[in-house]
Image (cartoon, rainbow, N blue to C red):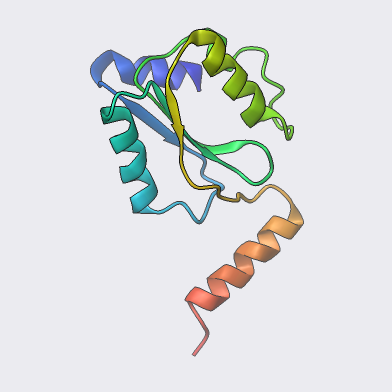
Length: 120
């Protein structure tokens, strides 16, 4: 993520990364992230129910933001908040979402998909 953000910020004012395993992120979430960054926040996060995040947007980047994080654990979001405070950055958090990491999550996704696209 660090390298992707560094590369994007060479040519753009902001960057938004999203997890490909979050089926409920909507266009409105991306717009809200963009507005948060345009509004003067250094970062924006969309917290995930499992303690991580499904979206991160940045106006600037620091290796400290991503280093030493216990990735794949339920403390990723909390550790990221600590880093943001240590860096002195302003951030905003969007709505809490869920992502597909485990079989139960996939079952939830399948139910959602069946509701949205019932068989005829």
